[in-house]
Length: 292
Image 1 (tube, rainbow, N blue to C red):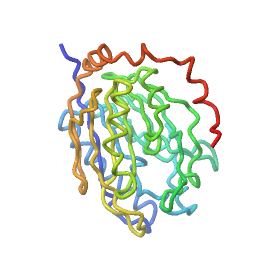
Image 2: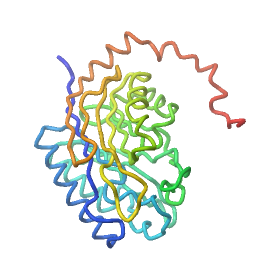
Image 3: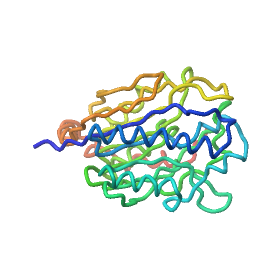
Image 4: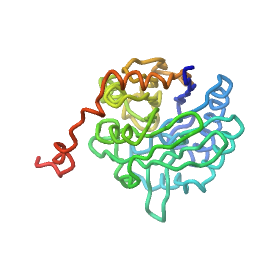
């Protein structure tokens, strides 16, 4: 009997502009996404992933300390607590990306992972932090993650998380596979004209190289008052052969629900023995600082 997991991805347009009062932006976005979570549950989703720092706009488009006001403790902040209640209500595991405050002045781009019964399982902190072009000033807001690449045993699958810019780095993607991930969720915020040509290349490549499913999310629309470009949506699931299963539109809110047959992982890994044929004794230099 196949081991089928029904997975949901939620992409959502920010309902208020980035210059609206902070708490109004946050509450409006949470209210909207909670409605989409109910939609995912109605479609039978067993695991649901939200977009990167889902309860606000993509504020690293500017460098302004007011956005520190969006930070919360994890897991003790109100948003994760709310999502624990929804997970229990709907019997649905959840990946919840938030802006985490570890201590005063120390912030991370974090995803909390919650099991079907509302149990908090742990968190992943975004490892690779960009600060390389106008509109993506993330080092102003986030420390690099320091928790490694954990994998969380939910009721239905072993789940890993990689966040946005992380997806450009194959090293962490491989470690998630080595740590046992069956599904890797990659919540993102990225714009057309910059990364779109990579969107359907890199993440299926991670799925193939590591023999797991990927569920990846992008925002949609433009977010005022900034002009960094259009978030192009196209959230999708892909299988361990790199085949895109379902993909959302590029310009509207959407809940993408796919059935993932986890038995395919064994089939693919029996065919492609990448873990058997690795030569880690040869890879030492990859962990050294670059000479460039």
